[in-house]
Length: 261
Image 1 (cartoon, one colour):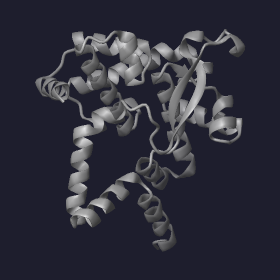
Image 2 (cartoon, helix red, strand yellow; image 1 turned 30 degrees about the vertical axis):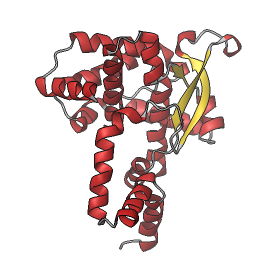
Image 3 (cartoon, helix red, strand yellow; image 1 turned 45 degrees about the horizontal axis):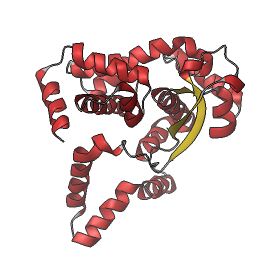
Image 4 (cartoon, one colour; image 1 turned 180 degrees about the horizontal axis):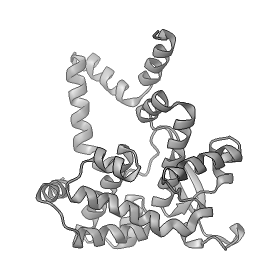
């Protein structure tokens, strides 16, 4: 039996997203059909998606958070540690709605947990269980410990400060994902083979394209990392990948198209 009240809830949540607001403005302002409005929105995403993340402003659902830098290592006390400012996505809109519909509250929490840990790492920082439990998710630390254990059983090691010894492995995993894309694999296949979400794979590829674009403009590695919102080691790995990886022609064409933009 279909729960109409539950369906109405998902519709209300969807109606709050910026994509829906954009489409409604197009429909009302230009007298377009919903199909035409969606086509316009898709074109906007296709043309400008590679450059949206270059903006220093926060997107809806994001927060700025101060975390310890990766370079500190696990032995350095927090009072002596170098800190960095990172942007974390607490609510990714439709992506999170779909995850909750499919996997429930626990699945959504674990999905968000993976995302914010990866986002912090990409910007040169690492989160702690205490940070996430008490300042971000407002849940018990034991709850997060269970989530971390469940994810580890799936082969997913979160880049937390307590697992900083795995940072090299995590970094190389991101490079491996981009390398698979350069060799011709599609997002969905990469996601399944690496235990990542398609949106995470898309994000890694988008960052890689930004790094390549900035590198061809002769920016130094520090500037590239800053403008692409990633750590310097990851920027260096992406540049090495660009120079030395085996890239199929369609992917080369896509990179060249990005450079032209």
